[in-house]
Image (cartoon, rainbow, N blue to C red):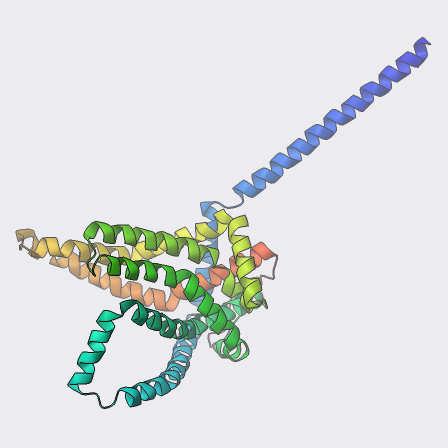
Length: 342
């Protein structure tokens, strides 16, 4: 009997040890997973994203410049073709354009500002969407660069031809989500205040606009990368919202880095512009001493414009595509030493 009890005791002891080890192992594994998730995105991760994308943008700077130039010309011609019939119809409808007609149109616009604003929104959305087609085509170039390690300017025209309607629909939805609400808030506030917005209210609206842009651009940052990778418009928006909420730190970390880059490049000229009225009216003796500093700010602004045109805009698109590929397990090619320029 004693032997039987001893055997049972040994077995229970072994079972308890196994359970304790299992619990410790699972707890440690869960802690590791938690640590990997929470520590997966740091400032070093964001910096590496930007640095890698900047190197690729530098290697393909001429390709991006030629692609942007060609795409803007094509889209401008398309916009002119669309606007020409509208202008002809308006000319015929309101001809002859006499002084009486102009006064009548002005009075009607003053009496119906909301209706006029609605017409303006309906006209602006397609034109903004048309120019966002350029952005979608450049995202296509960036997708080729990230996934294959090389790209050419012709790739943008290939994406434009194959995905024009998809890019157009994507641009329309992005315009409605990102640009339309702040425009309506500003317009309706101005209308309610008798077309006079105080400084305090203007500051409040500016803060609202910045926050709205930051959040909505972050939520939709993966839309174009998803579209160029083969997703439809609806699926791309759904996936972008899902990724932005699941990997909030990664996506909005990149957004914060972009905002800081904008502040570093254009912040000085904005601050100088805000401070200029106080320095000029009345003229302070130190104003003339600040001329060298103002000249330096202007020079820095000019350099910043060229940096954005040739490097930073391509870098941002490449960064978003790289982040999308990493988060979705897509293909990312190893960087090569030589990248085709054209």
